[in-house]
Length: 287
Image (cartoon, rainbow, N blue to C red; front, side, top):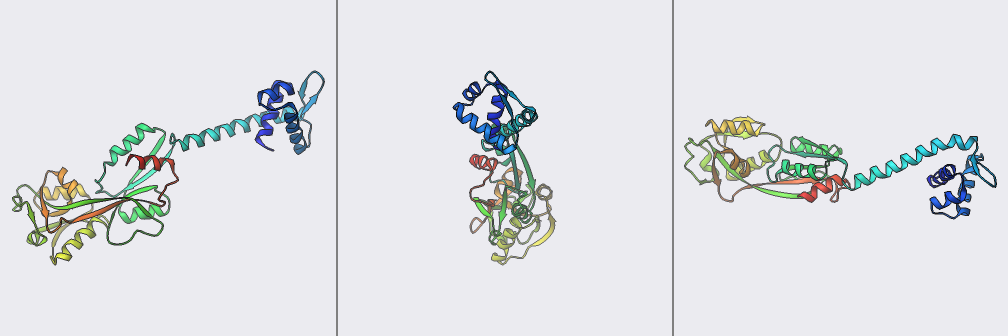
């Protein structure tokens, strides 16, 4: 049983006439009659009583009619739903991000997407890079902004965009280093450190910076929340090395690091270089 056969059957039932029904579906009368006969043959029942003056549904025809209407209506709704999805009018976008991502204004991007396509539902998840990788692999996320270290991406994942951020040291305005504009890692060694520990990425990059310089740090605070780290620095409890975009907004005194400046790498990661999700493609267009 094909949808076109049901469409032809409904047309005959509603018009009560093969010629007028054929005109309504843009077929010849002979083609329409053949389609209805094929449907009757498949069902093993006559659907119409044909006379010289009228065409009336049989008991089988009357039984089939509401089912045929519903199937045709649902088919039309299915086509419309797919069309809306492919146009970007509806759908879901699941995005992940590390806590310290500031290379792009993610809230602004999501707001732009919502204004342009209010039918798209956005789910945002903040987690560590390792957790975001796992969520991408299991298709819980469509895209994720992650902080990279020296290790390669997990198999099956690709970087669609990469971002570079300078790293700087920050201290409270009243700190002894508050008058220093630039130093090397050894210049920070005498002071206690506040370490950001929220998975790989920033933490491993900062660790590698001091290992290369042969500088041992006295880490007195280890926190997993960037706002908490900034508050501790603000109260003069230590030095921290953080991305420059975060430092710039913090109001803390920034100290450039030489040689370099050192930097970290972030990436927008996905399972496919060309995501199949229309919502994901529309979001990438905003970038």
